[in-house]
Image (cartoon, rainbow, N blue to C red; front, side):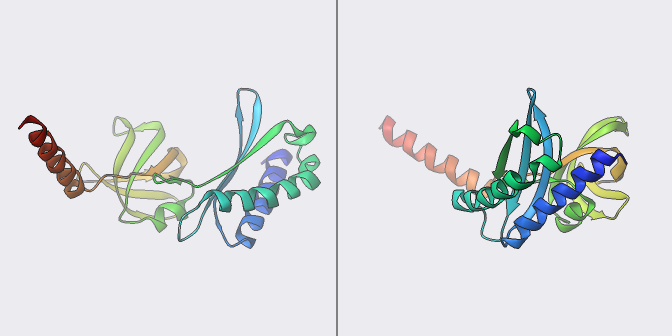
Length: 181
């Protein structure tokens, strides 16, 4: 691993410590480039969910840290970056094997760098995960083992409850019938 990568990992770890010290889970801390601008992305979560006040609190603490320490990381030096603090959202991204293990029995979508069984995307139920592999039940019946080294990204899948959807359609149909009479 290069010296820059080690420095970046250490820096991001310090950011994670600040977030957890404030009582939040640090789902992800990463540096990305968007249209030539560097973006420091921090995803936070907590049991009750995240609101704007939570993001504001974490953002304020991270801004203090960045003001004092951004010169340690050349990619952030000179202030040509922006900080994004947000919730992971309902279709939470999954980054590490521990994330997949935590959400065992939940539905997830996984995108791969390479073809596996002729596909680059799988959606299914997470059966298990260890440091090397993810095991999923896809298409309702096929158990597939995916090496983490070929996973490009993954996220939980949110589906509306079919009963709620049916009730909404039923209520909408009643409204339409009333209008016609």
